[in-house]
Image (cartoon, rainbow, N blue to C red; front, side, top):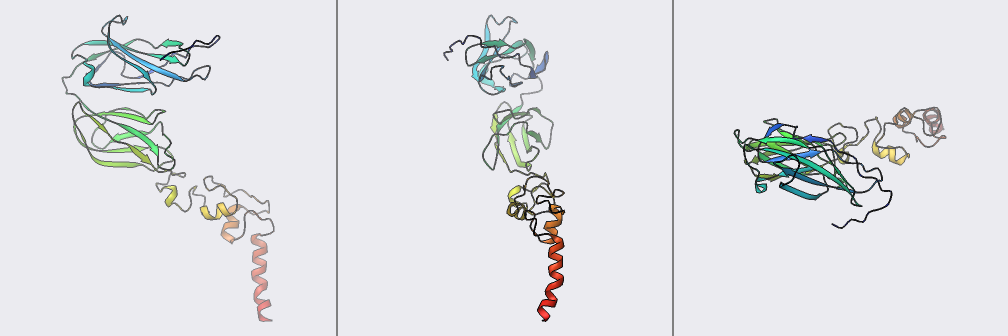
Length: 278
Protein backbone atom coordinates (compact mmCIF):
# COMPACT_ATOMS: atom_id res chain seq x y z
CA UNK A 1 0.00 0.00 0.00
CA UNK A 2 1.39 3.43 -0.98
CA UNK A 3 0.32 6.37 1.18
CA UNK A 4 0.55 10.06 0.31
CA UNK A 5 0.94 12.38 3.29
CA UNK A 6 -1.43 15.35 3.53
CA UNK A 7 -0.37 18.51 5.34
CA UNK A 8 -2.44 19.22 8.43
CA UNK A 9 -3.92 15.74 8.52
CA UNK A 10 -4.41 14.39 12.05
CA UNK A 11 -3.44 10.84 13.03
CA UNK A 12 -6.19 8.37 13.97
CA UNK A 13 -7.07 7.95 17.66
CA UNK A 14 -5.78 5.27 20.03
CA UNK A 15 -8.14 2.29 20.02
CA UNK A 16 -9.25 0.12 22.94
CA UNK A 17 -8.99 -3.66 23.09
CA UNK A 18 -11.98 -5.90 23.86
CA UNK A 19 -10.33 -9.34 23.71
CA UNK A 20 -8.18 -11.07 24.86
CA UNK A 21 -7.81 -9.57 28.32
CA UNK A 22 -4.34 -8.36 29.20
CA UNK A 23 -2.28 -11.12 30.84
CA UNK A 24 -4.94 -13.78 30.24
CA UNK A 25 -4.37 -17.45 29.44
CA UNK A 26 -5.43 -18.41 25.93
CA UNK A 27 -5.42 -21.32 23.54
CA UNK A 28 -2.87 -20.96 20.76
CA UNK A 29 -5.87 -20.70 18.45
CA UNK A 30 -7.59 -17.48 19.47
CA UNK A 31 -9.12 -14.28 18.19
CA UNK A 32 -8.56 -10.58 18.75
CA UNK A 33 -11.24 -7.92 18.98
CA UNK A 34 -10.80 -4.15 19.31
CA UNK A 35 -12.83 -0.95 19.11
CA UNK A 36 -13.54 0.85 15.87
CA UNK A 37 -11.35 3.92 15.26
CA UNK A 38 -13.21 7.10 14.26
CA UNK A 39 -10.65 9.26 12.48
CA UNK A 40 -10.76 13.01 13.40
CA UNK A 41 -10.59 13.90 9.68
CA UNK A 42 -13.12 11.20 8.76
CA UNK A 43 -10.38 9.34 6.86
CA UNK A 44 -10.81 5.66 6.10
CA UNK A 45 -8.65 3.56 8.41
CA UNK A 46 -6.99 0.14 8.28
CA UNK A 47 -5.46 -1.93 11.05
CA UNK A 48 -2.24 -3.90 11.47
CA UNK A 49 -2.05 -6.67 14.09
CA UNK A 50 1.39 -7.53 15.48
CA UNK A 51 2.40 -10.38 17.83
CA UNK A 52 5.86 -10.95 19.27
CA UNK A 53 7.67 -12.65 22.16
CA UNK A 54 9.35 -9.33 22.98
CA UNK A 55 7.40 -6.35 24.28
CA UNK A 56 9.29 -4.01 21.93
CA UNK A 57 8.26 -6.07 18.86
CA UNK A 58 11.85 -6.27 17.57
CA UNK A 59 11.14 -9.69 16.08
CA UNK A 60 7.58 -10.42 15.05
CA UNK A 61 6.10 -13.86 15.53
CA UNK A 62 3.07 -12.88 13.46
CA UNK A 63 1.77 -9.86 11.58
CA UNK A 64 -1.41 -9.25 9.63
CA UNK A 65 -1.63 -6.05 7.60
CA UNK A 66 -4.40 -4.08 5.91
CA UNK A 67 -7.27 -5.28 8.11
CA UNK A 68 -10.56 -3.49 7.54
CA UNK A 69 -12.59 -5.05 10.34
CA UNK A 70 -12.04 -4.93 14.08
CA UNK A 71 -11.88 -8.69 14.65
CA UNK A 72 -9.21 -11.17 13.60
CA UNK A 73 -8.97 -14.93 14.08
CA UNK A 74 -5.54 -16.45 14.65
CA UNK A 75 -5.49 -20.03 13.35
CA UNK A 76 -3.05 -22.90 13.65
CA UNK A 77 -1.18 -21.75 10.54
CA UNK A 78 0.17 -18.79 12.54
CA UNK A 79 2.50 -21.23 14.38
CA UNK A 80 1.90 -19.67 17.78
CA UNK A 81 3.67 -21.86 20.37
CA UNK A 82 2.06 -23.44 23.42
CA UNK A 83 3.10 -22.37 26.95
CA UNK A 84 4.59 -19.10 25.75
CA UNK A 85 4.05 -15.45 26.66
CA UNK A 86 3.26 -13.20 23.71
CA UNK A 87 2.79 -9.47 23.35
CA UNK A 88 0.37 -7.94 20.90
CA UNK A 89 -0.81 -4.59 19.62
CA UNK A 90 -2.94 -3.11 16.86
CA UNK A 91 -1.71 -0.15 14.81
CA UNK A 92 -4.34 2.10 13.22
CA UNK A 93 -3.41 3.68 9.88
CA UNK A 94 -5.38 6.34 8.02
CA UNK A 95 -5.50 6.72 4.24
CA UNK A 96 -2.58 9.17 4.29
CA UNK A 97 -0.23 6.87 6.19
CA UNK A 98 -0.56 8.40 9.66
CA UNK A 99 -0.08 5.63 12.22
CA UNK A 100 -1.21 5.33 15.83
CA UNK A 101 -0.06 2.25 17.79
CA UNK A 102 -2.49 0.85 20.31
CA UNK A 103 -1.37 -0.19 23.79
CA UNK A 104 0.87 -3.24 24.20
CA UNK A 105 -0.78 -6.16 25.98
CA UNK A 106 0.17 -9.78 26.64
CA UNK A 107 -1.36 -13.25 26.72
CA UNK A 108 0.01 -16.67 27.73
CA UNK A 109 -0.75 -19.69 25.56
CA UNK A 110 -1.93 -22.88 27.27
CA UNK A 111 -3.59 -25.73 25.38
CA UNK A 112 -4.13 -27.90 28.49
CA UNK A 113 -7.91 -27.74 28.14
CA UNK A 114 -7.78 -28.40 24.42
CA UNK A 115 -8.16 -26.17 21.43
CA UNK A 116 -11.66 -24.78 20.84
CA UNK A 117 -13.60 -24.86 17.62
CA UNK A 118 -14.06 -21.59 15.80
CA UNK A 119 -17.41 -20.42 14.45
CA UNK A 120 -17.42 -17.36 12.26
CA UNK A 121 -19.56 -15.71 9.64
CA UNK A 122 -21.36 -12.62 8.41
CA UNK A 123 -24.74 -11.30 9.55
CA UNK A 124 -26.83 -9.23 7.16
CA UNK A 125 -30.39 -8.03 6.67
CA UNK A 126 -32.65 -10.29 4.64
CA UNK A 127 -34.37 -7.18 3.28
CA UNK A 128 -31.53 -5.28 1.61
CA UNK A 129 -28.41 -7.37 2.40
CA UNK A 130 -27.00 -4.53 4.56
CA UNK A 131 -24.39 -5.71 7.07
CA UNK A 132 -25.56 -5.78 10.70
CA UNK A 133 -23.32 -4.84 13.62
CA UNK A 134 -23.73 -5.49 17.37
CA UNK A 135 -25.59 -8.78 16.89
CA UNK A 136 -25.62 -11.23 19.80
CA UNK A 137 -24.64 -14.78 18.82
CA UNK A 138 -25.17 -17.55 21.38
CA UNK A 139 -24.81 -21.31 21.73
CA UNK A 140 -27.50 -23.57 23.19
CA UNK A 141 -25.12 -25.81 25.15
CA UNK A 142 -22.27 -23.64 26.39
CA UNK A 143 -21.12 -20.11 26.95
CA UNK A 144 -18.45 -19.39 24.40
CA UNK A 145 -15.97 -16.59 24.03
CA UNK A 146 -17.67 -14.19 21.65
CA UNK A 147 -16.84 -11.14 19.60
CA UNK A 148 -20.03 -9.37 18.56
CA UNK A 149 -20.55 -8.60 14.90
CA UNK A 150 -18.58 -5.51 13.91
CA UNK A 151 -19.18 -2.82 11.28
CA UNK A 152 -18.43 -5.37 8.54
CA UNK A 153 -21.12 -7.72 9.90
CA UNK A 154 -18.52 -10.33 10.90
CA UNK A 155 -18.64 -12.31 14.16
CA UNK A 156 -16.46 -14.95 15.84
CA UNK A 157 -17.43 -17.48 18.51
CA UNK A 158 -15.02 -19.89 20.25
CA UNK A 159 -16.68 -23.09 21.52
CA UNK A 160 -15.72 -26.58 22.63
CA UNK A 161 -16.06 -29.17 19.89
CA UNK A 162 -19.40 -30.91 19.43
CA UNK A 163 -22.94 -30.21 18.26
CA UNK A 164 -24.71 -27.01 19.25
CA UNK A 165 -27.59 -24.78 18.17
CA UNK A 166 -26.54 -21.22 17.29
CA UNK A 167 -28.85 -18.19 17.54
CA UNK A 168 -28.26 -14.69 16.17
CA UNK A 169 -30.31 -11.90 17.75
CA UNK A 170 -30.61 -8.16 17.20
CA UNK A 171 -33.22 -5.58 18.19
CA UNK A 172 -35.76 -4.87 15.41
CA UNK A 173 -34.99 -8.19 13.73
CA UNK A 174 -36.41 -11.70 14.13
CA UNK A 175 -34.04 -14.10 15.89
CA UNK A 176 -32.52 -16.75 13.62
CA UNK A 177 -31.39 -20.19 14.86
CA UNK A 178 -29.38 -22.88 13.09
CA UNK A 179 -29.52 -26.31 14.76
CA UNK A 180 -26.86 -29.03 15.08
CA UNK A 181 -23.82 -27.00 14.09
CA UNK A 182 -20.77 -29.28 14.38
CA UNK A 183 -17.69 -27.60 15.87
CA UNK A 184 -14.30 -29.32 15.58
CA UNK A 185 -11.26 -28.53 17.73
CA UNK A 186 -8.92 -26.11 16.02
CA UNK A 187 -11.09 -25.97 12.92
CA UNK A 188 -13.08 -23.08 11.54
CA UNK A 189 -16.76 -23.42 10.64
CA UNK A 190 -18.53 -20.72 8.63
CA UNK A 191 -22.15 -19.91 9.46
CA UNK A 192 -23.82 -16.82 7.97
CA UNK A 193 -27.15 -15.34 9.08
CA UNK A 194 -29.78 -13.35 7.18
CA UNK A 195 -32.09 -11.67 9.71
CA UNK A 196 -35.61 -10.55 8.81
CA UNK A 197 -36.62 -7.01 9.92
CA UNK A 198 -39.15 -6.82 12.78
CA UNK A 199 -39.93 -3.16 13.51
CA UNK A 200 -42.13 -3.79 16.56
CA UNK A 201 -40.05 -6.66 18.01
CA UNK A 202 -43.06 -8.96 18.25
CA UNK A 203 -41.22 -11.95 16.78
CA UNK A 204 -43.06 -11.69 13.46
CA UNK A 205 -41.14 -10.44 10.44
CA UNK A 206 -42.40 -7.25 8.82
CA UNK A 207 -43.22 -9.22 5.66
CA UNK A 208 -45.62 -11.44 7.63
CA UNK A 209 -46.90 -8.81 10.08
CA UNK A 210 -50.10 -6.92 9.18
CA UNK A 211 -49.25 -4.24 11.75
CA UNK A 212 -45.49 -3.68 11.78
CA UNK A 213 -45.48 -0.95 14.44
CA UNK A 214 -48.11 -2.66 16.63
CA UNK A 215 -50.19 0.52 16.95
CA UNK A 216 -53.58 -1.08 16.23
CA UNK A 217 -53.80 0.05 12.59
CA UNK A 218 -52.96 -2.19 9.67
CA UNK A 219 -50.00 -1.32 7.45
CA UNK A 220 -52.34 -1.24 4.46
CA UNK A 221 -54.51 1.44 6.11
CA UNK A 222 -51.52 3.50 7.25
CA UNK A 223 -49.93 3.53 3.80
CA UNK A 224 -53.24 4.45 2.13
CA UNK A 225 -53.73 7.31 4.60
CA UNK A 226 -50.19 8.69 4.47
CA UNK A 227 -49.24 7.39 7.93
CA UNK A 228 -45.97 5.68 8.84
CA UNK A 229 -46.43 1.88 9.15
CA UNK A 230 -43.18 1.62 11.14
CA UNK A 231 -43.97 4.28 13.78
CA UNK A 232 -46.69 4.18 16.45
CA UNK A 233 -48.81 7.16 15.41
CA UNK A 234 -52.17 5.89 16.71
CA UNK A 235 -52.69 8.80 19.13
CA UNK A 236 -51.83 11.50 16.60
CA UNK A 237 -54.36 13.39 14.47
CA UNK A 238 -52.95 13.72 10.97
CA UNK A 239 -55.85 15.66 9.43
CA UNK A 240 -56.53 17.76 12.57
CA UNK A 241 -60.24 16.91 12.61
CA UNK A 242 -60.39 16.19 16.35
CA UNK A 243 -60.17 12.42 16.01
CA UNK A 244 -57.03 10.33 16.50
CA UNK A 245 -55.69 8.23 13.67
CA UNK A 246 -56.71 5.09 15.56
CA UNK A 247 -60.28 6.37 16.01
CA UNK A 248 -60.43 7.06 12.26
CA UNK A 249 -59.20 3.53 11.53
CA UNK A 250 -61.74 1.96 13.90
CA UNK A 251 -64.55 4.02 12.35
CA UNK A 252 -63.46 3.22 8.81
CA UNK A 253 -62.84 6.86 7.94
CA UNK A 254 -59.79 8.47 6.33
CA UNK A 255 -57.08 9.70 8.68
CA UNK A 256 -55.81 12.13 6.05
CA UNK A 257 -59.14 13.77 5.14
CA UNK A 258 -60.61 16.34 7.59
CA UNK A 259 -64.00 16.10 5.85
CA UNK A 260 -64.22 12.35 6.48
CA UNK A 261 -64.70 11.99 10.23
CA UNK A 262 -66.23 9.35 12.51
CA UNK A 263 -68.90 11.89 13.59
CA UNK A 264 -69.96 12.65 10.02
CA UNK A 265 -69.80 8.99 9.11
CA UNK A 266 -72.08 8.14 12.04
CA UNK A 267 -74.52 10.88 11.06
CA UNK A 268 -74.76 9.56 7.51
CA UNK A 269 -75.34 6.03 8.80
CA UNK A 270 -78.25 7.36 10.87
CA UNK A 271 -79.80 9.25 7.92
CA UNK A 272 -79.41 6.59 5.23
CA UNK A 273 -82.23 4.28 6.54
CA UNK A 274 -84.75 7.15 6.34
CA UNK A 275 -83.65 7.99 2.81
CA UNK A 276 -84.01 4.36 1.78
CA UNK A 277 -87.52 4.14 3.32
CA UNK A 278 -88.67 6.98 1.10
